[in-house]
Length: 314
Image 1 (tube, rainbow, N blue to C red):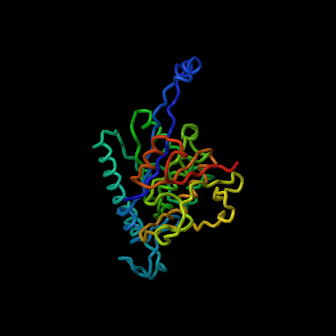
Image 2: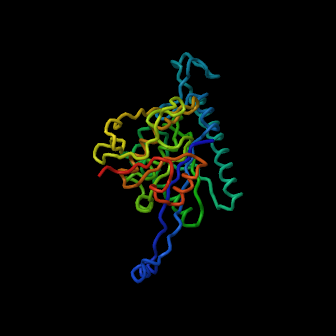
Image 3: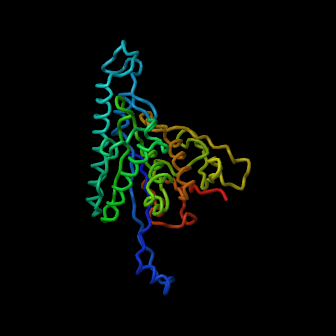
C-alpha cells in the first residue's frame, strides 16, 4: 500500500444559497466536502526510483557502480539517456498504481479521474529544481496549471486522483516530485487563489495511527501524539501537551521503508507546517481505520479515537 493525502474543498456557495442562509441559517444542511486525493508511489515507483538513484531534491546518480550503465568518464554521473530511462520507467510504474486506484474508485461508483503532474504539466519540475521553488515564476505557473486542472475536475463533479511523480529536475536530469511536495504546493499561499480559498483541511493517510514520540515500529513504548501546534512565525512544531516535559521530545525521521525515496514523516510534517501557515488544519491518521473514515467525513477531531491533529499555535 502507499501513503495517501486528501485535500478537502468546501462546496462553493451560490447567491441563492447566501440568501437562504440569511433567512434560515440554522436549517441549512451540511454539504458534502469535495475531495482531492494525492497518493505516493508505494511499492510501485519507489523500488524503481531507488534502483536508478532517484531521490527528492537530488538528480539521479550512480550508486556504487550498481547502475546497469556505469560510466567512469563522467565521474559516476548518469548520462542523459540513463536519466531519462530512470524517469520513464519510474513514471510508468507510478501511473500503473494511479490507474489501479482510479479503477477501484470507479468500481465503487466514484467518478474518479487520474491526473499526472510530471511531464504532463508544462514547466513542472522535480523537488530541488531551481525552477520548482515558490519564488520561481516557472514553478508557480506550473503549479497554477495543476490547480486549474484540479478545480475544473471538481467543478465537473469528478474526484481528482493525483500521484507523486518522476519528472525533470532540469533539462538534462531526472528527479522526484513527491506527493508531500504536491500537497505543499497546492495549499501554498503563493499559488492558485481558487485552491487557497476553498481548501479546508489536509488529511494524511499513512500506515501508522498518527505522529508518535518515536518510530512505533521500532519502539513499543512510542506514544501517540494527539495534537501538535505550529508557531506561525517560526514554523516550529511543538507537542500540545499538559506535560511540559514531553514538549520537544519528538524524534522526527524519514521513512522506515527502505524503498522510500521521498522523506517519510519528515516530509509530511514539512508539508503540514506550510498548510497550517496557510490557514489549514492538518490531520495524520492510519489507513483503513474508522478514525480515517470519520476525519474524511468531517467529524470533529475531538470525537475521533486516534490520529494527530496539527493546528496553529495561538
